[in-house]
Length: 78
Image 1 (cartoon, rainbow, N blue to C red):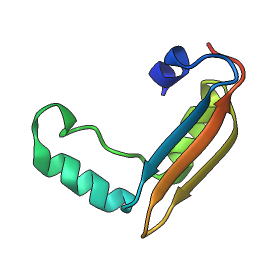
Image 2 (cartoon, rainbow, N blue to C red):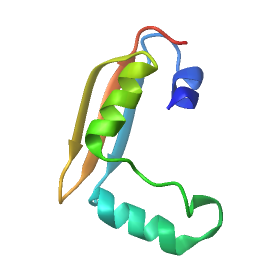
Image 3 (spheres, rainbow, N blue to C red):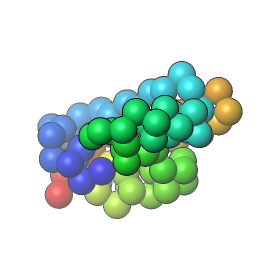
Image 4 (spheres, rainbow, N blue to C red):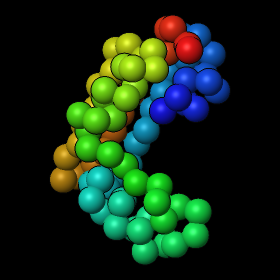
């Protein structure tokens, strides 16, 4: 998440949007192999905490059986 904070400008917005559940996205990535094999989405509460820790505000995360959405605004880049 720290890399996300580094590439966004102050007041920049972050949107992570998958129209599949976290479990389905992670299963697809795990089976794909190569560079994305270990690129897995953490549980929503963990994503929220990680984003807040690196300076995102107005963080909202929806981790449901239908989708995975995380939004936030970077106010204090590290």
